[in-house]
Length: 196
Length: 196
Image (cartoon, rainbow over all chains, first blue to last red; front, side, top):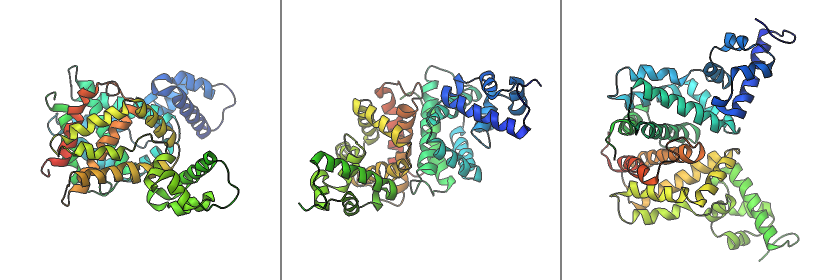
């Protein structure tokens, strides 16, 4: 695989790519950054970036040290159809966030919050890509769908901030099964209720 | 009014108090900080702090450069009773946030997000105090009320982050009257629906 410059150990190369990826995503946002530019600034061949990390999305998640791609959970939640989707989404979501993965994710958000690119990250990626996946997997159609899914995003984002980042009680300590019908009902309403 | 040290201009004294107030609120949170300690570290008499800023709450808002105290809006919204409270809350809330005051508040949150104390600020103050005021003004009672109002807080916080901080479209540009029934319905449901 062609590379420029002296060949450092694989670990060093991976780290260098991740560092330049963070810079690029921070500066240009998820959509604006490209694997080609990241490879160039890291002094490696784009093919090597693909080899190590796969897609741009996977590189992004690796740069953020996100242990699992939340987007990959959506198809499973959507597979049973739109009935009960809200509750399943919230249950899965709380399951991940209440696990050690969630503790790591909260620490990540808290540290990321100190950098400007958290705004880009959350907007471009966590919101847009997850919401787009919900739209696609549930085969939602209609002019009101984009607003509906961003309302879903607003409640899920508020749940993360209130429960895991700001730890507002009693929400922060409530058992998941107490929250699932409450918040799941909100998600379901945003997705399936007639326009108000 | 007794003060220690050389007397600077009033403006300098005010600024010094605000600086020490920000440090104290940042270090100890809203509940932990005291006017007495802030006055001592600023080298002034506590009475002078009261003279300039009134209550601890008003000092906190001044330290944050918050142009209006959102808590003072709650009694007016609650005065008409719980029927339609959700929609009135969201309408008032969007009215403030869509105004120049909201632009300033969003800039404040974005800059505050770079400091650790935003977590304390949002938890101790914006959430707890506003939510407590909702509870009091609506005379809500029952063991489930604290969870209900923090669910309200989670959706309102999510709305702020999605619309004003991360500017997720189409939520960010939606007319208030489109959002009021959607989000107001969620707030109303959290406050008045039977336990799910």
